[in-house]
Length: 83
Image (cartoon, rainbow, N blue to C red; front, side, top):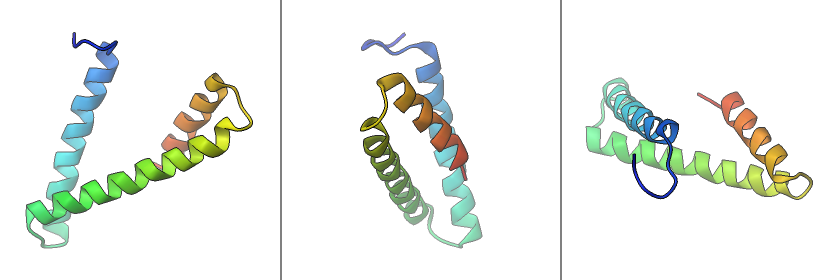
């Protein structure tokens, strides 16, 4: 197990994320007939935009909620915005 308090689910989540990123890159490359490197960079831009949206939601939510409620709402929001 890695250091820094990671648990098994976190490591599995990172591995699953990497697999999804790879598949999304290949799909975008094929569907939009673009170079895989260009498709990868676009996927990263999309991920950055999604992370920015999560942070905005987090900042708005934490003003009126405790930490547990905030995290629960963020997880629910993320699942509702899954493409």
